[in-house]
Amino acid sequence: MEKNLITNSVQYSYNKNYTFVFPDIVCEKGEHLLITGASGCGKTTLLHLIAGLVTPKRGSILIKGNDIAQLRGTKLDKYRGREIGIVFQTPQFIKSLTAEENLKMAVSLNNLSVDNIYLDSLFNTLNIVHCRNRKTNEMSQGELQRLSIARAVINKPSLILADEPTSSLDDKNCKEAIKLLRYQAEKLQAGLVIVTHDNRLIQDFSKIVHLES
Image (tube, rainbow, N blue to C red; front, side):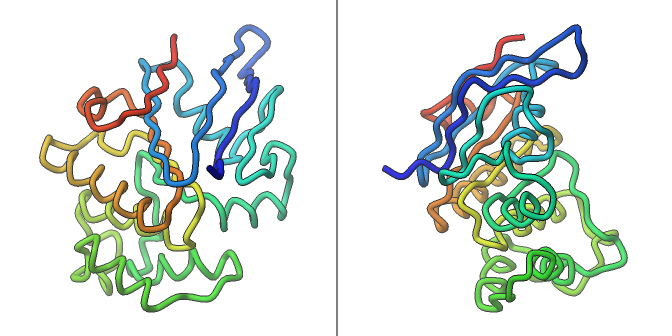
């Protein structure tokens, strides 16, 4: 089966005194992976490495066969924008723009054309049609999180990354957020990698990587 993500011997140093040494990870096309561990074990750092937001001290990170750790500048930005969708722990949007304008900007920044049918389907399946023309500073936290999922998949990436997507949610909204993430990943046959310390998610995933402190 096609492998959307392969990491090999990845290490990262914040300073000379401490180095994170990460286990090797494989995420196949359409596979859903949960990365767990206590605070401070490097979960978010690993996610940022996979996303190309930081560069490893050593090791390789292959996304659809391309080592993102070797890409720089505009090549990295272009590849990340088209192949990787990210749901950050805290939703970040341009507050002066509407929900739809924020999504369209995510497309245009990567020199892609807006698929209006797909855009419509995202607003419908994520139940945020009523927010379409609403500015993001007028949306609730739950609505912003669903919009974050829409932005992560708007360019139809091969890999979706989510950083603590349920940390501030009650049980009902926790289940709904994970259901929506998995549904969108399945539609795209994208790999899905979620990092979390939320033990509520463990029962829903068959493939789990636990990071030690």
